[in-house]
Image (cartoon, rainbow, N blue to C red; front, side, top):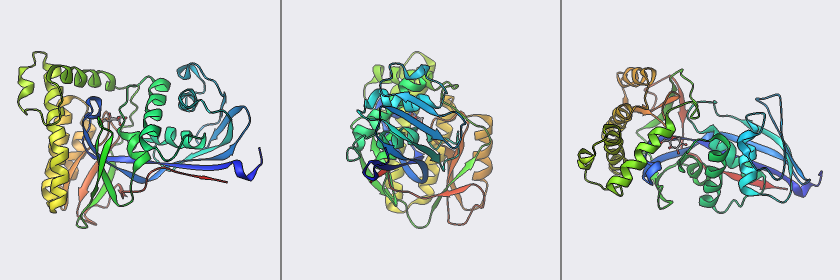
Length: 337
Ligand code: GLA
């Protein structure tokens, strides 16, 4: 186990989604960027067990290579490791440590970054970002029982320095989107922590999926098509997803033209639509309103699932001195030996 050649260090970034939330349940459009912060797993491959220690928890994840039901593993944080094991089925073990530079519960996708870093450390191929993301999505779904989409894992795996990614989540394809020099992206904490397991995430997903069953592809759909749906909660979901898919494309176009004010307005429309969908909270709404009143702030919205967490802000450089500045960063990487 001390063989230099079996040493491995894997890193996977978190993400901030600029626009396009609750669209990946129906294969829609999203526009996230990987950030500099993320999860690092360092250790040595070999042996017949997986032993991972975390700086954040006393009890380690200590698991056999074959795990049948990741959701029943303890301690709780080891479930994600177990989920990755169950999906990856590596033929050798691992012993190492995990550390994170992402604030937990921030909505910057710490759990997706965790799974991607663990999967790479355990030997998942690094040259197939779609396969890696799909494996980690299944792992997270099995481990936490949350029917998360593919956005977070895919941008963590495929991120590019200096670029956001416009991802078609159904086709698993993307194109890079540059941010104009006249803007910066910041994230500001609403003070309300969030976990998807304790939220209404699954029922929002079901409403979106039902809307797609009723209307077909929600990318490029008639913006008024939702009016034909009888169930008001499904109609609201359809209205959000159709509009949000459209806003993602319009946002990328606006940035491409250097229309940063237009891009900011689309973020605000996105937030209002997510609030109607029922995934915002009073803390998120009042933070967005307060930030929008600050000079130089072009747009602000909840980012990710909602139900708490952080707000993403588009502003002129230096306009805001709260929160954290985030820059589009490279995706996951692994170093061996
Ligand atoms: C979470 C999920 C993503 C996506 C967003 C909402 O971050 O992990 O797949 O559904 O919520 O856009």
